[in-house]
Amino acid sequence: MGILLNIIYLIATVTFIVGLKMLGHPETAKKGNLIAAAGMGLAIVGTIFVHEQQVSPIIYILIGAAILIGSIIGWLIAIKVEMTKMPELVSLFNGFGGASAALIGLVEYGKNVNNATQSTTIVSGIIIGAITFSGSLIAWGKLNGTLKSVVRIPYYNIINNLVIIAIVIFAAFMVASGVDSQLLLYVLLATGLIYGILFVLPIGGADMPVVISLLNSLTGIAAAITGILYNNMVMLVGGILVGSAGIILTVAMCKAMNRTLGSVIFGAFGGATATEGENKALGSIKSTNPSDAAIMMNYANNVVIVPGYGLAVAQAQHVIHELEQMLTKKGVNVKYAIHPVAGRMPGHMNVLLAESNVEYNMLVEMEDINPQFSNTDIVLVVGANDVVNPAAHNNPASPIYGMPILDVENAKHIIVNKRGMNAGYAGIENELFYNSKTSMLFGDAKAALTDLVAELKNM
Image 1 (cartoon, rainbow, N blue to C red):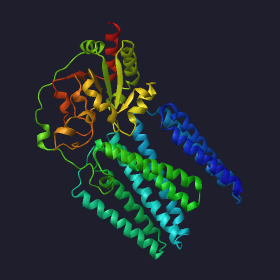
Image 2 (cartoon, rainbow, N blue to C red):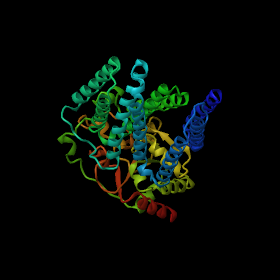
Image 3 (cartoon, one colour):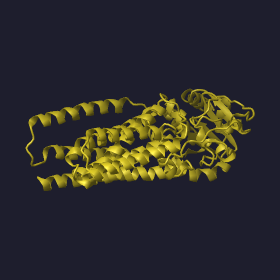
C-alpha cells in the first residue's frame, strides 16, 4: 500500500510541476490548470482509499459528503464569477487555504505537544494560517468596496511590529514549555487573526495586487507546513510550489510598485498620504467623441492600447479585440501595453484579454513598450488610471511617486476612455488627463468602444 501511495503522490507531484510550467503561457494555461487539477484529484483519491489502517465507514461518508458539498459550491462560484470579481475570489481562496492550515494545527497540537519539532511546525501553521485567513478577508472587503481603500491606524507600523514580535515570543514559549492548553492555543490563533487584520487594513487599494500575491504565497507556505506535519510529500511539494511562486511574483510586483519586500512584511507599506498640493487645479481638459477618435485612429500608423480595470468592469474585452482586429485590417500596427499591476491582481489584464482571444504576442510588457511610446501616434487608455499617471514621475508628494508606470505621456496623441473624472484606486488626481495631448472619451467602455468600432466600419 505504501509503495502504491508513493507512486500516486509522485505522479501528482509531476502534474503540479507540469501544470505550473504550462500556466506561464496563455495558450497552455487552461490545459496546465486541468492537468494540475487532475493530479490533485488523484492524490485525494489515493489518500482516501490507499492505506493500511482500518477506517470506519462513517469516515468515508463524511469525507465524501465534504468533497461533494465543496465541489458543488466551488463549481457554482467558478461558473458564475465575473472577471471583475476574480481578484475577490482569489482572496477568498487564499483565506480558506490559510483557515484549513490553522484548523489542522488546532486539532493536532495536543497530540504532538511533547515533540518540539512537530509542535513548532504546528504552531507555525496556526500563525501563518490565521494571518492569511483574516488578511485575505480584509483584502476581499477592500476589493469589493465593503471596506475603505485605506484605513488609517495611528502608529500602525509600531503596533504591527509589536504584535508580530509578541506572536513569535508567545509561540516560542508554547513550544519550549510544552504546555498543553487549548486556551493558550486559541489566544495564539486570535493574535494571528488580529495581526492579519492590522497588516492589510492600512494598505492602500493601489497596492492590493502585491498584498494578494503575498497572501497567496503564505497560503502555500501553510500547506507546506501541513505536509511536513503529516509527512505527506504531495502536500509539501504543492505548498512549496505555491509558496515559492508566490514569493517570486510578490518580489516582481514590489519592483513594479517601487516597493521593497521588507516594507511589505514589516508594515511600512502603502502608508503614504496625499498632500494638499495633489488636489490643486491641474489645468483644463478637452473631450472628444467616437467619430473624431475613429478618424484619428483610422489614419494612424502605430496605436497602443492600454487596458485597465475599467475595461474589466464594462466587460469590454471582446469589443476591444474587435477594434484591434479592425485597425489591423486597415494596416495599423496595434499593440497592447501591459502594466504588471494593472487591474486588481497580478496578471489581471493578461487573463482578461486572453478571454477574448487576443494573440499573446500582441501583449507587450511595460519595460518593452515604454521606449516605443515616443514613436506611437495614438495611445488608447481604456479604464486605466494610476498605472499611467505622470505624478509617479513628477510629484514627490504623491503616494505613487517612484512607481514605474506606462509612459503614455510621450505618445503623440492620447485618448483616455473613462466614465467620469473620478480618481483611480489610489485616490489621487491623474495629471495625464490635463495633458495638452490628451482627449477624454467619456462613457462606459463597452458602449464607447462599440461606437468607435461602428464609426471605423463606416470609413
